[in-house]
Image 1 (cartoon, rainbow, N blue to C red):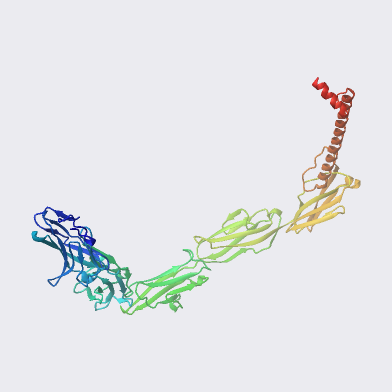
Image 2 (image 1 turned 60 degrees about the vertical axis):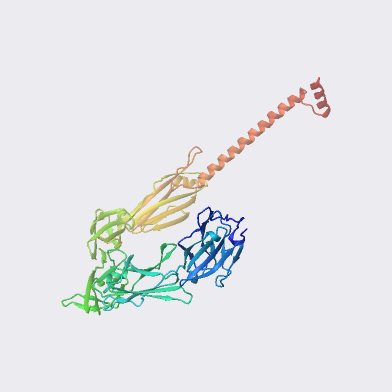
Length: 590
């Protein structure tokens, strides 16, 4: 007889099933003790059995047990399967290996199920499996007490609340502080937990943590953990970690100076910040001690303990105080700091300029200034010139015209980078003009334009005149004058030359330029007094010579080429028409 459908097959009168063993002395059934399945999924309950070899009839019954009563929910006789129970109708089936399946399991399916196998007169065997239904709870949510907790609270304050919803079976909640578990005790920690069974049959667990806190708990981190059993193992889920707002009294005050660099300079922006270690921070009062025979305290306008001094002056130096009164401890607290503003002022040079001297005089320049620290003095000729000396005084002996110019005194405050000043004084040495033009012999060509340069230095400023008329351009730089004269070379100029004269109230000085006719082999000298047209004329003459040579060479080449062609023609080597060309071809072929 055959058994078909969800139960598999019965072949002949004996049972030949996968999961069934033939040849046993009696009917024996083996099953798992427990089976776990998630809510809403399909449960699979295996049933393995063995039967005697001579059995000629078999059936399988499935029951569930509720309050010691059995209810049949599925059975198979021969090849027919039946589902008599309405609660499970359409949700149960049996696979080829006799595994019983329950689809879309509910919490009510958490029961004991019995598999019963009968072999007619040879006996009946059965066994049972307990079906466990589970539902992973939602991750725990934590809500911290954001109102703040004072460390002086006499009652145990509420720290946080943790909740985990929709779990089955009922989960548990454990509290942690800085990674260490917290347990109930009589004085410091109290934990209140409640378990609620929802209408769906799932459980919601809620836990409230109460604990005393200390100042150190301002950095503590709390979290909760929900634990539950799943597939025979312990599972956990953790909430986020939260911080507490802890209120505690102020025990210490600090008053700190913030500036662009360690050494405060005049003009810097300085911030004084008063801070206490209490929470919430107390009210701060900033004051400055007024120096005098009887020191006084001046209240300063600050915001939340912060005082900003923009472009500080030396008058801002002094001692600053920060005071507060703590309402919790009923104590007055005070701290102070000294502000030292480095300064540099009163820079002057004596004697004051401009200073006028005679050649050979001696001059002593003295630089003086006042500063918050020892000062360093440096002297230079012109602001970016070389270093002349250090110290307050600079001595100039036997001055000359070259000693004229600006003398700079640079002053810096020792140990305060960037705090420096400088001042200049102009020194003028009286002297008659000195002409620095060195070119006396100037090669020229008749009728060309030549430019002569005359340089003179003197104080008072000199005036330069020329012995002849021409185009004159003058440039003056303090006590130095440069004069350029452009003239056309004439025979008379070649004979007389040109003279420049520099004059001031102390005397005069002259310089004679001799103009000499330039030969073709003579290269023009390089100097301030020669003119550019000389080079241009020489280049023009050289270019004309090159052109003439090239023309002569071309004429000779053409003449030689014509002679050669004429000679070849006379010898008959060069045919002059087509017939001649053909004769040449015949001669070549013969």
